[in-house]
Image (cartoon, rainbow, N blue to C red; front, side):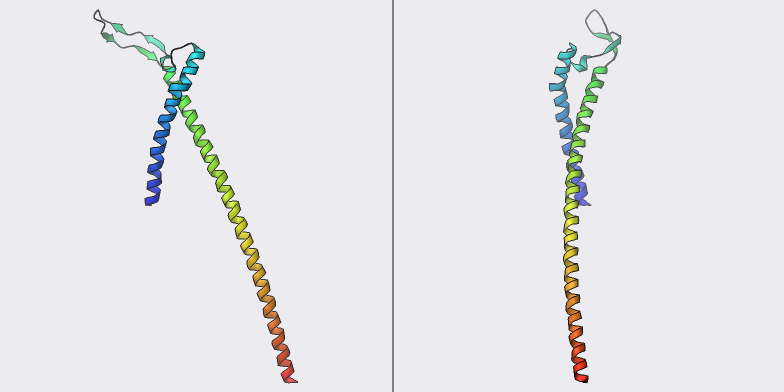
Length: 143
């Protein structure tokens, strides 16, 4: 039980760190490339404004802007796809390693069974020889 809890804790820590790395990758590398292609400043700046913010004479916001920020959504989708692909690749590698390990284990078990069968065949032949010798000895004593 303690090992499983420890494994899970390590997984959570590594997962959160990996999430930060992916977020940084998307925000600092992928987003600027997409922004260059779309002509926008950044993905997070992409939005549809339903009602602009209203300012008073002093420049203070009287009424906040109402906008659909679809750029944040696109960035979250890119984060998710990268994380999902990474997990897929890791699980695929683990499954391949597990299959190879099982194949090796099966091969070793089969070789062991063959050796045991050969040994039992040898033991059986020796026992049969002993029985024949004993029966010869017994028949010679009777004669």
